[in-house]
Image: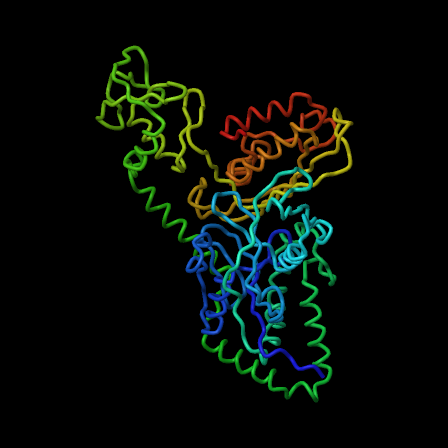
Length: 502
């Protein structure tokens, strides 16, 4: 009989909206493993990674949650062989949507990519190895390509500290238990069911369950059937003792309690902010934003009114006694300096302003779209008017949640009717251009907003935000389908109004 390896690699993982388990970085895994050993209740991931400063993990329920939204997802503590890719310290990453932001490929993809890299392949098509993937990687250019749209991102191979390692005597049993806990969380999160592209299903529930976990559970059941030999094992006895100590020390905190706590945090922040006079909030910061887009006027404009306060520009602004006048440097529309500051402070205060006369955007406009997913597929059907090409199908998925400080009613729940929503574009040069600009609008949270629905009059619900989409493939009396030869040009104009250009 082969002897077991004395050490195993411990990887902490979370499940994405695509239904796949993804590993946290080695730094995060070391933090979670240390907290697990020391019986810590709640762990803030921002302690080791600034980009995760709003995420925490409930170590009782194996649930990750956001301090800013109602987002939650299962996590698990997974055990791998010490001879596997996870223990090598070599990782592959792709560049995110913001400079300096890198995302890790999951362990299986990293193993596959590293294998191709070591064998000196010129490229690797991940779609042939992983069902549901749509990406290829060029090792010569170190770029990832979307096989459908051609969109490219940089990739890199880096060496970091390896994942934590532990002795093999208890961890294999703990892994089974924690996988089981994570799977229970999956059964309560229906949103993962519709987004589990390419996941191997092996049970009747319809939810993604890792095959390695199922094998471990099967082995455990076999062990239970042989109670004479297994019930007295030192591993099980040690596990029961550990669980008894952990349960005794911990006060159980549920995911619902965590969300209620964060809702109270939103409300307290909003109440604190709302008690101040808006025109005097952070005037110094607002002035810095305004001044980079404006030039001071040295002459008085007697005949014109300020379109913000409706007072003549030759008179003082009602928001301040400062007589300073400025004009925006591209459209040249003039305003009281104090009025622009007031307008900026009454908005999202995200570093952009929009001319109230011509709607010209200065800086980068961002919206308040709730969290969700945007996926694209190429389908082998043509749209009316585009019989010569295939069709790009966009799927937007947003779930109900709790409004944050940037929304109309912080702390109040919002609904999300009609999701997932499917929209269609022709697979032409202009259609792919629109797709990439829609991706940019999605990243800036501009596709949807929380408002009152124009069709149902329901308040506090997710609605479209002024960028029209075609939600039907065939013709429609309501204008939601094709043919529509002017649609692509019209949506490009709508995107431009939102500051989304090439």
